[in-house]
Image (tube, rainbow, N blue to C red; front, side, top):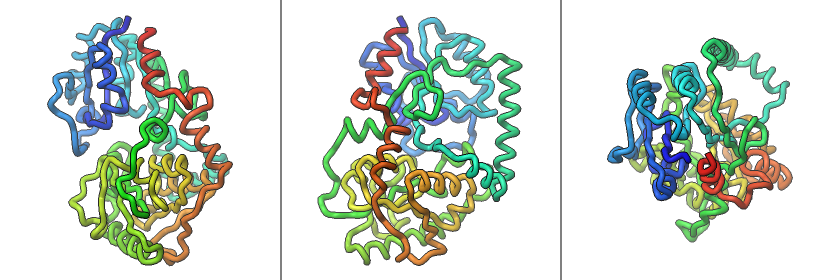
Length: 374
C-alpha cells in the first residue's frame, strides 16, 4: 500500500496549493508527505507572495542534480507523485527522470476551464494574425519536445484527472472552483449590493514568466488608470460600489484602483453575492457562471498588446456568447453587463467544471480512493 505522497510543483508552496492538493488531508490520513518546490529550477525569477516556508517536508530544488538526488533516494515502489508542472521544453528532464524511474504519477488538471474548444476557422484566422510568430514558436518547441520524448521513451502521467470533457482523462474530477461553490458555501462579506471586479494582477501576474515571450510588459499604471475611470463610471451609473476581488498572487498596496476595497482570497464569496461581475480572462468566470450572475468581459489596449491574453479572453467570451469591450476604445456606456444564456451556462458547467457522474462527489473522496487502492 502506498504510504508516501510527493508533490512536485513549479510554484512555491502556498496555502492555496495546500488546499488544492489535499496536503493536510493526506497528512491526517497517515501519509508521509513531501513538497518538492522546483520553481527555482525551472523559473529563476519567479516570486509568489504568501509563500509557506517553515515546513520540514518542503524541499527547494534549484538544480537538476538536486532533483535527481532526491529521486534516487526515494522509495519509488511506495510513493505516488503528484506532478504540477507545464509540459514544456524546460521541464523535459523532469519528465524523463520520472519516466526512467518508473514513478507512479498523477496529474490533476486545475485549469480545465482555461483550455476552451476552438473551431478550425478560429485557429486559422489566428494563424494569420499578430499571433503568427508566437504560434510558430510554440509549434517548433512542441516538435522538439515530441522528438525528445520519443528518443528518451518518456511516458506521460499514469493517471490524468480533469474536469474537462474535451481532454483524454483517465479519471473525472470537479474543477476546484466547482468544489468551492457547491461544497464550501459561505456567507457574504458585505450585505449591501455591489459590483465585483475579478482581478488577475495584470500586468504583474507571476504566471506571465511561465509562458510570456515578451521582454517588456504593458504599463501597469496606465492600465490601472483606465480601470479606475471605468469603475468611477459604474459606481455613478449603478449607484453601488465596485469591490476588487484580488487575485491570490497579487501584491497591492491598497490604492491601485482608487479608494476601493481590495479583498484577497474571497473571490468565490464575492462573486456569489455580487449584483454584477466584470472581468478579463480568469478562472473566476466559473463562479459567475455557476451563480448565474450578469457579466461583462473587458479589456484595454495594454491587455490586448499581449496576444495570448487577448486571444484567450476573446475565446472565453465567445464560448459564453458574449463580446469583449476595450475600455480604451469604446465609450463606457456601450459596455453591457447582462446574463449568460441558460443553455450556454449549463453546457459550460458540464463541459469544463464537472460531470453528471461525479457532480455530488468531492475531489478528496476521488483522489483518496485512487491513492488508497494503489
